[in-house]
Image (cartoon, rainbow, N blue to C red; front, side, top):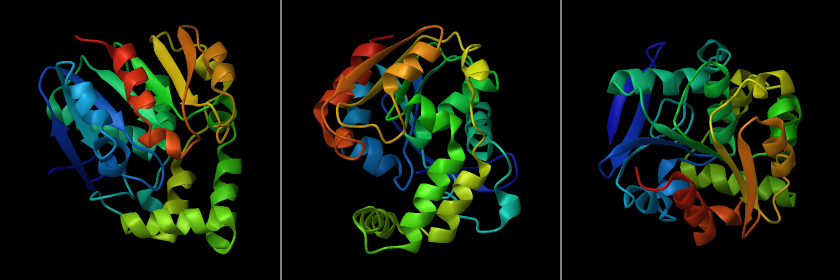
Length: 243
């Protein structure tokens, strides 16, 4: 476990695995690097290619700071944390992988000028980037009503990660929507990959079409189960390849 002070002084934690080309992997909402990437074996699979896998816990998640104050969640806070981490590590040439919220954060990095060699946007569709307010409402309703199927799942995930409901809602306060005009400027080669039964964030195919240099792929599972299915790690590893 490693820690550093981000752009505003808050502490961000990260782990590393393997050696070689830096590959930054960003986990999803209500998860952390361990549950999203390490336990399912995806991080090890990517590291085995000859890569230095960098696995931060996003702000509000895992072992990173979980601030409740609204001022701790400025626009693009998550993307700015990753920019600060790369600067802290002295890394300029790297590849980028994100799942769900991690994919949303990856897009914000790309919009802000990040230039990874390759990128993977997993568990993400076009509407999930454009209509961030709808996603916040979805989770706010689930947190407010814990007895429904979605509410029970959300509370179970928060309990597993020791997450605070009020902090989780702050996460979406900081997320900036990415519109078609933003996506049209991204030239990085990108794999957009989602489970066959995953429309949680909209269409992966529509997102790939909105990007100048992307292709879409489907793997097994839905938004939750795809993380644990080997086909996701296989797709990510095949796209990244050996450095």
